[in-house]
Image 1 (cartoon, helix red, strand yellow):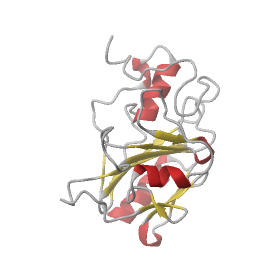
Image 2: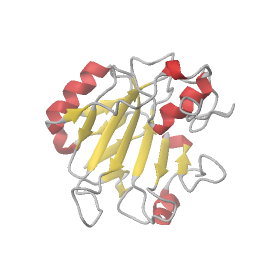
Image 3: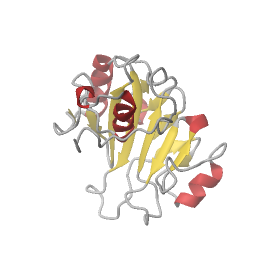
Image 4: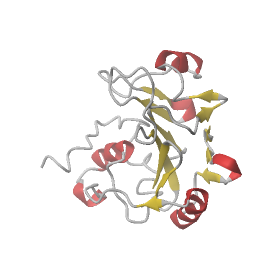
Length: 203
């Protein structure tokens, strides 16, 4: 199982270690390679900070996993889930600050991950959305008014489905605190100044 440890990181399956917030990229790469035996780089179409004249837009792209940093190119594949890591913003780009976990539907025709993704004993991908939200601490809210996702600021957790009609969560982002974006972009899961990660694409 992958265990979500808010404020700490993610414990890997079979006692393989913990992806700890604040770790440098080289340590992360070694840990994930040893745990899974496989890793690969992010898509080359991802944007870099130089594509954004305003950091609030880079922040939004970073949250969505579109921002590319050559130092953070490790994507680890476990049985049924994919783990992607990233450093923080301008004040913390050299330290782990963002961990994304996504259910991979390809290995399992039924669509369920073989590796549970747990928070406090609850499989976040294994139960209907409303059941998960009902046990999360504090108020949950979407990242934007029209979104069907859920953010849990006390946990630094962002949950999303593949589509708004999907009854189960299939993607999560866990943020370390601080993430490195605080000095330039207020807001956790969406910049309070109105970021837009597509600005670098739609010039």
